[in-house]
Length: 459
Image 1 (spheres, rainbow, N blue to C red):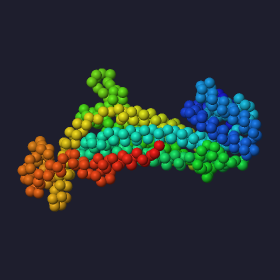
Image 2 (cartoon, helix red, strand yellow):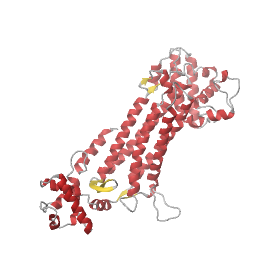
Image 3 (cartoon, rainbow, N blue to C red):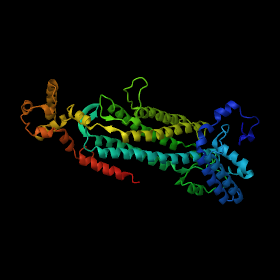
């Protein structure tokens, strides 16, 4: 077992079972770049303050850069028996450069070091996820542009309600992803606070220039309370919450894709490259990408609940429970990053069956509201118009007809106010086209929405 950097107080070696239980190297090894980057900035600041010599800082810098190069190139293996990545790197540095390596940890604790590394990692990963959000956002916008005139039924309670366009439907998801991007941006702003210098919990007596480290690492602020800085995981929880809400949107979209790809709906066909088959039934074409995305949503929810539960009863300041933050947030991040390209590619390559969408929009009496609005225009109250429209729907159902199948004489059985212009009023295309107010499904309204959405997040 490797020598512990903290074992001066102890007269016995750590029990192997305790070491295995305590170790985090299996999952925090991914932080090695952030750990080295933070240590480089810390060492430079120590030298600038005169706490270590320039010669020691030079040796530390060269040693850390060599370790980084060796790890990136695969020339150095991370020791799985090390307690964590921070102690592995410091131990390796000391092996390479001797006594100067033992001075690196001056003025810091693993508590503020871990908090720093995690903020650096999530800041970088958050930026990558944001790029993935934007690619999905743009894909939805491009699809909306292609389907401005693709009429489909809009639904409430999964029952056909009113005619809209596929562009309008897709733009609802554009709005969701826009909120996801905004939430992520806000989260990354709050995350970008530099905790190093907080020590274990009470700062340090060394005259550290914390702002210098913050500037070197591109943080916009330094933490204002050392207790909070080492025990805060709000930034982890908030990112997990952002990802959970995003995955909820993904799951809703995936559910619709699964329904639409079924033979019962037949609104779309998924590309072969984004579908799978059955080992037994040769005719099957399964929407596994959408199903997995829907399923993985629960996994991201689980990460958020893990983090909230871990933190809910912890006294100030740091507690070992907080080591459990990493596996949860790493898994949430990895899951979202796995879903994004698969989901985006599936949407980009799917085929829309326009005629089936149009046929569905024409059925289900989606123009019944427009019939009521027509009667209101003739002077009836909406409640009276609503009643007449409902009776006409019942009349059609008894005769297996649609509203547009009815003769004018049949319409007049229910209201003498109905004239020949009723057919224009209840035309599916006109039902959509008359809804021109902002946020509505008419072509010009959706075009304005697309234009605004494209300007929302400039490159």
